[in-house]
Image (cartoon, rainbow, N blue to C red; front, side, top):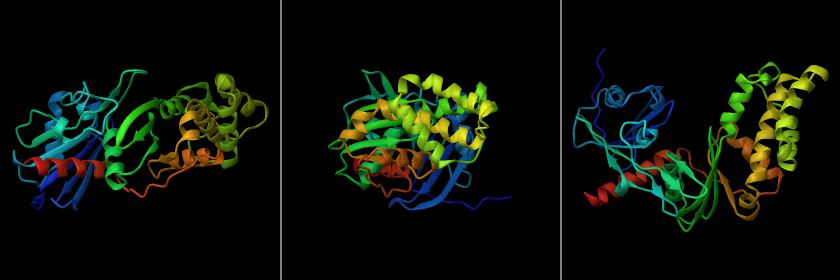
Length: 303
């Protein structure tokens, strides 16, 4: 089956650990086509990135003059080409700090991540989302909460990443839900909003007792018939509540915007709103793509 030729002016790529998203773009920022794959960095050796990209760009004539701008884990030490971190405080890094990957087919440039010396922390991919937020709302100052497997809390002042902190809350939830003793008590789907609120309050008020509160979920399911759905929601609430306890100075003292529109982001918004945090709404459908658009705009200015 033949694929009709398509002629983008540039290509935007978000290459994460588990998935790849590709947008074929015009020079004025319109999306001609959107493609995705499960060939994330975690499944690839270094010499496999170019063939995977070539497959994703089926129908696009090969050209060394076609810019392919990549953010995310393709720039990690285990990725295609390591793109060195930029140190905070800094604006979100852009095309001027990108690293060219060795590629026979395309002009591939990988955007760097951001590092923080103390406390030690790193991000890769989120900095491009932040660039997208600042492209759409240049005057934003406050705290960005970026929910995900590894949640990021990022303080933004005058267009610069001042500091940030990462929490493994999403990964801990997945491990506890699927691989701990709680897997016998926690449902794999469904939601109980009241149980979530109880968990948030408990985790926020008593973060030092988190390990005991987690086992209580198992005990309650055995002794008091706690439902799997309620246990799942309370598990999420406990973990998010403990995270909110650790980040209290950020969301209590600054305007907070939660990035994303999925269920996890909505849970963070609900938990923060219940605590009286000042929430700032962001109307940005695809912040990563917005950030890659900003990188391409700077590339056009320099060529």
